[in-house]
Amino acid sequence: MLTGLILTGGGARAAYQVGVLKALAQIRRQCNAPPANPFPVIAGTSAGAINAAALACNADDFDGGVRGLAEIWENFHAEQVYRADSFGVVRSGAHWLTMVSIGWALARWRRARPRSLLDNTPLRDLLGRMLQMERLPRMMRDGHLHALAVTALSYGSGLHVTFYEAAGPIVPWTRSQRIAVHASIGIPNLLASSAIPFVFPAVALAIDGRIEYFGDGSMRQGAPISPAVHLGAERILVVGAGRMNEPPGERPGSGEYPNLAQIAGHALSNIFLDALAVDVERLQRINTTLALLPPAARAQTPLKPIDVLVISPSERVDDIAARHLGELPLPIRTMLRALGVQGRGDDARGAALASYLLFEPPFTRELVRLGESDTLARRDQVVAFFGWPQAAASK
Image 1 (cartoon, helix red, strand yellow):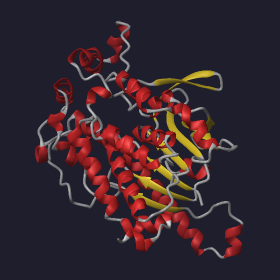
Image 2 (cartoon, rainbow, N blue to C red):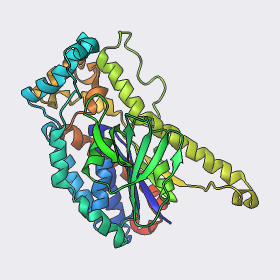
Image 3 (cartoon, helix red, strand yellow):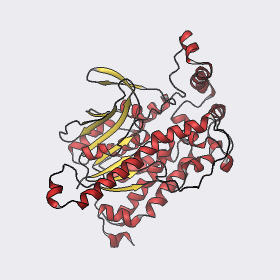
Image 4 (cartoon, rainbow, N blue to C red):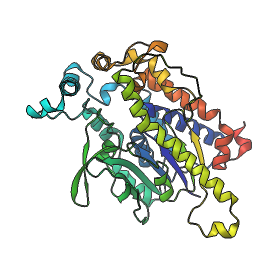
């Protein structure tokens, strides 16, 4: 049975995924389970695409790949992802904000073409150092990896595109507003998938001999679990970047008019978080319906039950980010303050927006710890999902 891994987007929130992976590696060792890669099918979106590629490139050493990711995420600094110095922020962010405040008409009159809020050139350099993408074909050839998929949105066509690389022939699929493209996945694909709208610039990729510009794969991603299913996964572990269900009444409204940062934070949450919850519910409904069908009727449908386990933060990531707003570099704090990010702790406003940019150790380490504790708290479910020896796991 092929096991798939879905790593979703969320900028700096993706540190949570590393904590989950660290706990999985620990549980597996305690179970004395086979050391082979537990995820032959890996699919990632946005920052999750980067984590997915790192695991895929190290599919012959899962524990080593996880340790490498943890070393990076637990010691992240914003300047490794985007220009956080005063000149870099002024050159990109301030110019972009000026165009927003004055209006695009004036920008066109001056022939100014702001591309994004921040310059993520440092991320390209970091990926070049941390990833050995040339190892992918060998990982597949040697049987350590069945398939890797990363997703991005074409700004030109509006199509949601899944780029995939597989060990064997897999026919590309086409669904409403989404297609799959067989490709040799490289760093440009990862940059495209993680290009948060407005925040990071679009990335040019070639498809069928033509150039298209792509942005974050979480945009218009109506079925984030779908790529793993198409690539043959029969059971899937999904790692989210936000709470799947918000308890009603837990966050009473402040009664104040929302500022731009708060609105932007909700918009990004809609992009990064909401589609996953809907897709998980859809998959669970399909499983329930299939279980009600008699065997003869089930044999007539192309649908098949997919065992799914979802691990997502047990705490509000926005609240965690609110405690660490002061960790952002001063030029970034100044820029975000202009958008309305202010305060700290319970009095913070706009922390959701800042959470996607908080590539600083105090924040990422807390998310890694949360991912570990959430996963270890569900040890029995994890062991049952993988079919690892239960007796050994309880020791």
